[in-house]
Amino acid sequence: MFVGVGAARVRDLFAQARANTPCIIFIDELDALGRARGISGLSGGHDEKEQTLNQLLSELDGFDPTIGVVLLAATNRPEVLDPALLRAGRFDRQVSVDRPDKNGRVAILNVHLGKIKLAESVDPAQIAALTPGFAGADLANLVNEAAMLATRRHAPSVSLDDFTAAVERVIAGPEKRKRLLNPREREIVAYHEMGHAIVAMALPDTDPIKKVSIIPRGMGALGYTMQMPIEDRYLMTRTELLNRITVLLGGRAAEMAVFGEATTGAADDLVQRARDTAWSRKSGRLPSPPNVHAISICRG
Ligand code: ZN
Image (cartoon, rainbow, N blue to C red; front, side, top):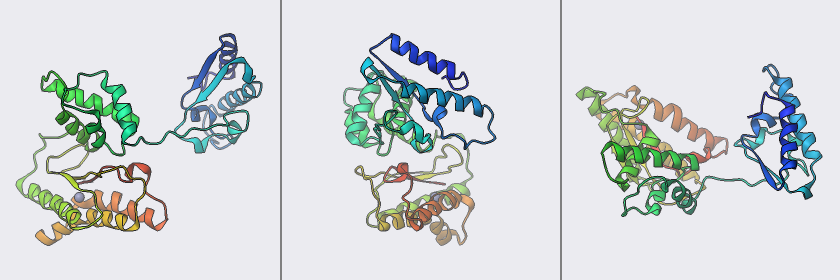
């Protein structure tokens, strides 16, 4: 909050904290003010930010650990923080909060489910099983979406079906039932999606197919094929990556086999997904965490 307001606010914050011990100072999005100095170059307000950071550093140095002020900060981008912030005596202990595993998702869901009326038959573990790869914010969003779906059908409580539908909404965007596809295009999309599904089912070491749809959704997806991992996993083998690329190519292959030519419907499969997966294999880098054994989806 105090970026741009300056060093005086930082001084004031620490003065207030010392006057109100015991207390906790929590700085959210620490990277907004703690970004490494001297990199941003042309950006306006650069000096102002630098002054604010310098003030924070000097407050940290004058910090007496015995007075009962605990200092906490959070960031999604620890790699851009100024190294001076992380030296001994400053923010020198780090706790990394990863994407939650299944038990973690149950615990997070329990927090958010308290705000809605859940159908009695629904166990939070069932919802956690539907959401591999979801972070805390995704789960909060999911509960909200499920509650809205239940409200829309005038239900007294939120059912597991609402959550299943909400998972699809969160991952693939809202359904666009009103967008009319002509029969020829719908047929092409249907064959395309079946291509993904058949290849996925034919290959070992692929996640089971959860759903195939030719109802348009979100931005530009005319249909989609959704694969859902059966357990939380953190590594992918070379074979699994190759199989994933093969599944992505299955849609286009089906168009070629049935119609003799491909359409632009495979653009997202090829440009975004297959290329990125191949690139991560070549460079030895795994796809970024959301892609590793989270729900994977072939759009279009
Ligand atoms: Zn596709």
